[in-house]
Length: 250
Image 1 (cartoon, rainbow, N blue to C red):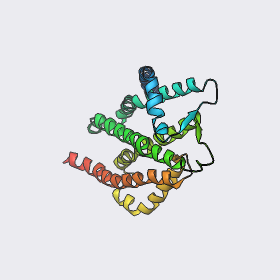
Image 2 (image 1 turned 120 degrees about the vertical axis):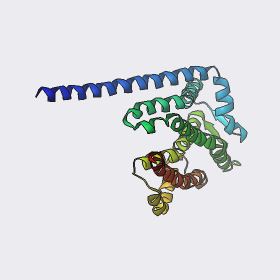
Image 3 (image 1 turned 120 degrees about the horizontal axis):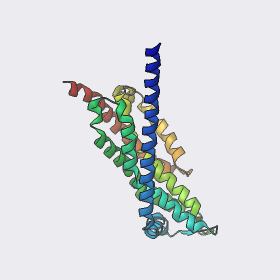
Image 4 (image 1 turned 135 degrees about the vertical axis):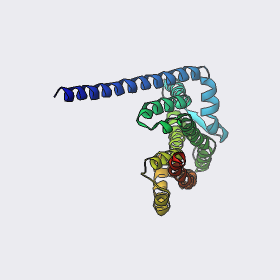
């Protein structure tokens, strides 16, 4: 009985230690977002007028502010979102540090590479959405009924539209990294991915329709196309993830 009590206490302390570790990682991540948001605040005019409104102004559209506090709210939203994006490498690092104690020693040494490639995939999705998805969608929508209607977009609707595309694309581009981890744990195999390729394409089309805040097929297809390419790349990543342990054992 004393031994059982001692073991229970050790398990309880271990659980509390994990909670404390999680709390500290969350605090570090929030501080990173706060600091990055403060830095972004110094460039708020550039971020709003050039970065945020740039794609809209290039196609000849003009944003409208429909509430007295709309401009201030726009600046705040942009600063916070930019802060989150800029702090993403730090957030991913602390997430990895929280998970790494449960991994094998030879798996922990890949922390920097995993954080780098996860950040790279996320930023690639954001870049693709900003330079291709958003301008193409705005150009497509601005051609409808312009001889009868004047298309002036409410700034809050535009922000929701843009953030949905950008953040959605950023998350979608994480498919290779997700495949890597699932393959590491033996949940996904290259054979499985090849066998269900057609099913995956259907799921990709559904995901692109859900992530894209617009009902048009053009924007959805533009998002689905790189996802299909990423799926094919993920097959090779799955092969690499499963061969790596064998090579290290040898």
